Amino acid sequence: MKEETVHNKCPRCGSTHLISDPENGEMVCASCGLVVEEELIDRGPEWRAFTADEKQSRTRTGLGMSYTLYDKGLSTVFNGYRDAQGNRIKDETRIKMDRLRKYDNRSKFDETWKRNLSIAMAELDRVAAALHLPQSIKEQAALIYRRALKMDLIRGRSIDAFVAASIYAACRQSRIPRPLKEITKASTREHSEVARTYRLLIREMKLKMTVDDPLKFIPSIASKLNLRRDTEQYAVDILRRAKERQGLTGKDPRGIAAAALYMACIDNNDKRIQKDVAEAAGTTEVTLRNRLRGLESTLKSLLDTPEKEIHQIID
Image (cartoon, rainbow, N blue to C red; front, side, top):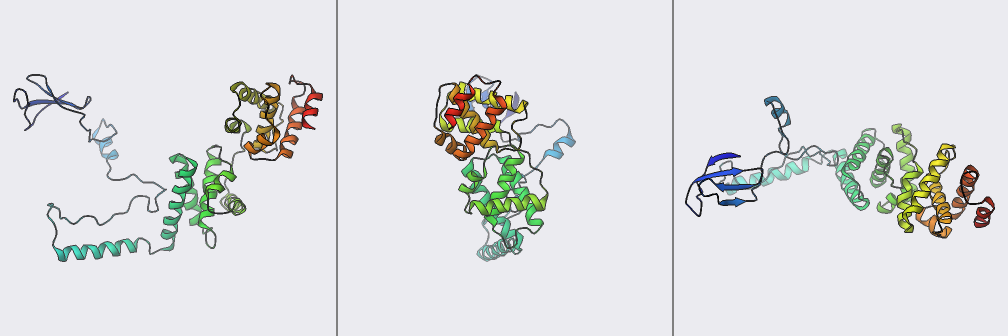
């Protein structure tokens, strides 16, 4: 606790000897113990520093730098109609400041790439909010878009398509399960155009994308089908056994996840029709049956369901 003498007086005893307790957010009278004020606001920084050099290095003002802002949040603005002493400025000076503010705002968008970023970052915020993406994914997608803009890949192409493709690339790199169809639904461009733009990003920027694991699609598909917890866990066990036998390579991960869930539904008597499972996974019934046959051949010695019974269900 820290003692300080202030001009405020204690309403009970009239003492001016008040003690401020920033940890509890209270101001207490040292004479009678009355809590004079509570819920004090801590206006200090959120970081701690133990040396003078550390304090100097962490000192900052304003908004932190962010790639999701077209100017990274580092630009300045003309603001207010008062001088340094807090007095209102004269009318002539105010008119001059209004003119300077207008010129300053126009100068920020003189270059084409600045106008491009202004439009793209607004679209990025909208799509990311619709998909409920974290701030880290937005930052990564903005960085990918800025690299594509610097390489002059966007000239003559759609800004919105590049934004959607950048978001999908960021999700793939961070292993966040967001299918391309879900992103294109939130975008203003067609699925085929966004997919073509994504392939262009991969080819020209030489991005290395990790292969999606079917396990990460199990929770979302099971949630859409409203499956029991034991059914979902059994589908995970099926995929793990198939992965040990190298039975998941070269196949669409969403189709394999759907097949594992459908097989788990049959074994646990939590049955769902193939059409519902395929729609929840964003695939077709033909793909579901093909992946189911592949899992059957891989795990026929491990599953409890007889092979003849599975053939009857498939056919």
